Image (tube, rainbow, N blue to C red; front, side):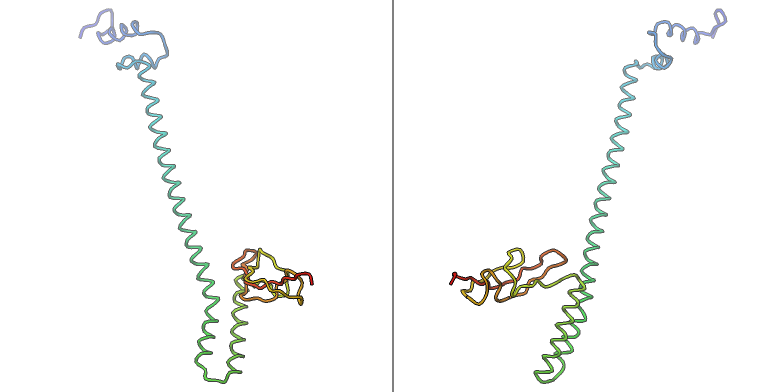
Length: 189
């Protein structure tokens, strides 16, 4: 390679290219030397940025889905353990009933034993925040009572519960089962 005026042929070619390129910042001239126009270079940058953002979005969606699955699994485990605790509370009552059935005794002793077991069951339900709904003698309340029959009577005020056929229960402040009741109806006599 020869030198003309102290420059190599490669240097001359580079200078010639610089003079032919449009004016701009230094990056454009380097890009133009590599064979891409500034618009193509910008397009490549935007495509790379888009690909990067799409990859980040896919990762974020996968992380969200994994978090949703974990939360669902934790909720199910919580329900399972809550049921297990409730069952543990009721098991002593079952044990007492089994012992009562094994004993050979007269009716009065059997009744006394069943009353104790009933009290034990009521205590276990109270521990689980399950409470019976007061019915007999109370005014009929459709939120807690289910009227099965209207009874014509003058012995009780109108719309008063005169008989409870099946006890209702609440869990904390939520109705589990309404009480099935008979309600007084007066004809004004």
